[in-house]
Image (tube, rainbow, N blue to C red; front, side, top):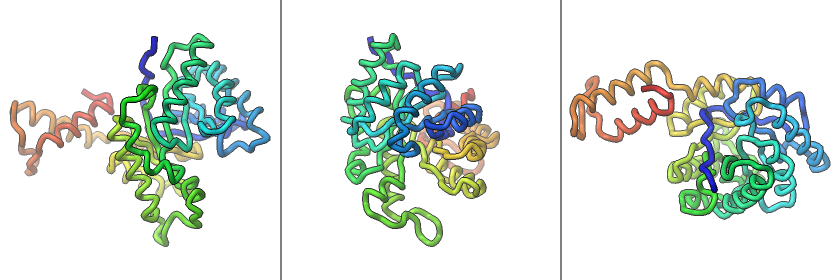
Length: 300
């Protein structure tokens, strides 16, 4: 029997740690990151991948909080993917982070691998969640709407993120940002396609990393900006980035108070399509946003 994959309780901060460094993995697990991404892909050299698999499996098996520990495996099209999964799934990670995903077919293929490995190791079917990086190749950009369909493995997918570095490499682009430091059109399009695709699929859109890990003020400003656009969390590459990200993606007391006031205003006028609050006219989409914010914050 297949069970729905559990949604992580919070998905504000996703902190990468190279899978071939026990020290960095331990530091990441000891951080306040909601999800720790033990990496077997880009941060691990090919000659170190076998050793990294064993180290990641050991890190997960020894942890009392396995649901927080996810693994970024290698792309589904390569041989390393199967080796990664065979090594780490027996340890019971909370989820798998799939890079260079190119549509729903990749999620289905990963789902079939997970079914077999879960069955072989006594893990409840469907327990291993999946998140996907959906804009890292040129082909992937045309597939961001596919994840909303009805396909095997759909129930595992809980988040979608995007990336600029691999995409720029695929395009042969020498730069990703303009003189003002903002992403150029192609990468803003990738961000938007991820956001829209995730919304269509009903999963959490997660903002990509900020490589300049020492500039925490810029990081916090960007995190607040993308949250206002609809993102639910952000990837991090350094433990110092976790606290600003968590703060940016946590509703403030003022936001919660306003959301409660919106909900109450509609409750006071049953059946109304529009209500007045604080000198502004609010319609049903405002109510839905307020209810969503309260639900995500665990507020009543």
